[in-house]
Length: 276
Ligand SMILES: [Zn+2]
Image (cartoon, rainbow, N blue to C red; front, side, top):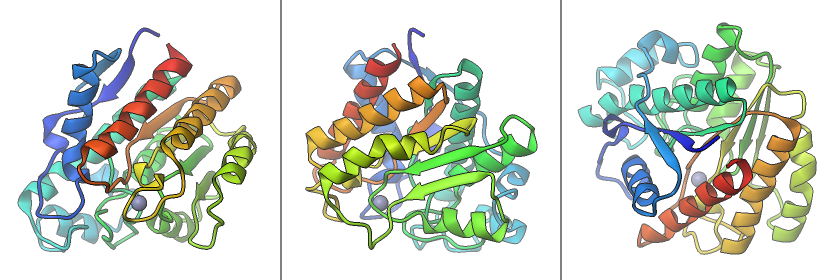
């Protein structure tokens, strides 16, 4: 492997009036990686279709969001957000396919998935791209079991709701609950064991959230060094178990946004160190 493949198009970016930088982050993160001459290869994703999205969500919800009749995860009806959503889901699905094909890793510079439920948008999340990818790849027979390691600082309640509603016993979902202790060293000590619990999965989806940083205004308990250690453990353990990884950016709310991008740069560097 000579490059980390990144599934990006400017069509996945939107700029709603929001306190979250996430819908604009794909462009900024990719620019950072190219500016720093990191060995990444940018590939145009395929858009997710309405029917592909409707495998994870109620069809009337999908139609209502795409036609701007239902409120999106930014509590608005912006057309540009609706237009971006097939591309954010498509970026993640395309990257997941690539990881399965190359057997190692691929990146989707996306956020805004895990609070989206069957027919609800919440917390900057409108469609659950994790579940859209898992359900489509499973329906196509490309995966039997999928692992989701959600290292965003917040619980993936939308993911959990869809798994429960559709009784998806073939998905193993690990996400941080509000009641979980926030002790950095025990968290990192346990992480290799958590990773090995995915050993029977055909694909691991890794949300490398930047809001786990201790300086994040929406939470966080890991220092910059500890976040880098988190990423290093995830990539090295997955590689040792020969489980392909598709990873994305998830949350991150420090200001200026450059502080968030520095964390995503570090995740990309950890990925490069592990795989190239
Ligand atoms: Zn979060």
